[in-house]
Image (tube, rainbow, N blue to C red; front, side, top):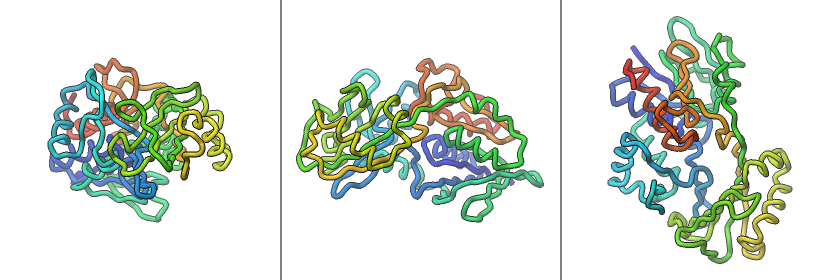
Length: 317
């Protein structure tokens, strides 16, 4: 009996699981975090709320648009801004969209996979929590360095060469709660306002927060330079960088999120990699051949999940 195990509950994992389940294949998902979503991440800050991973997504394929239209009809998603390739947002924060997509799936959170083995025709996934999950097929969806770490802890003779070609940049994100509202333009976003800041988002203007909460994304060069510094030093440095745009006296609280593998610097022009029989690696860094954008995004994660599921179902895309 076929049973597919998927590691990671971001857009790729959730999409692949839904496709497999629709085809009548038993599937389960494991995630090391306490919630589904991966970089579809939202945090409560007092009475407010902030997206601090993906802020929005765009649509370029008819395939993705069909599902997005359904999400709009279910009042999970709406257009945020933009006419050419509109920016869509999750109405209640990006993590709410992930939870909506996961609601009918078999998901185990707080399960960090350490090693993987193959015996008697089945894969075994061993977690830090001393559990063993068996499956006939596996889809890994975390960033490739994390997959490589699991493989290095295992005895499988998997071909890691293609995974090692993928390169990532980190991102430091400050979640800033303010005493007063500081509006930004028509939709609450500033892109590249300075040489060190990649993006500032006002979530009250975005419509997901009752109070004035911002996400501030430092650019990849600044993030790479400062990533391993102590949190208190980082928050002080970020406050200094953003005071011109927010005002130091307006800050009520500030938190830090470190994304070690936030941005894909080098993508693969194939929708997944099969590193052993029925052991696939997929994710936003894996682009379909017809994708001319040359960069990762939520849509590429979705399409990679669809392709990986189709491969395991014996279909070709």
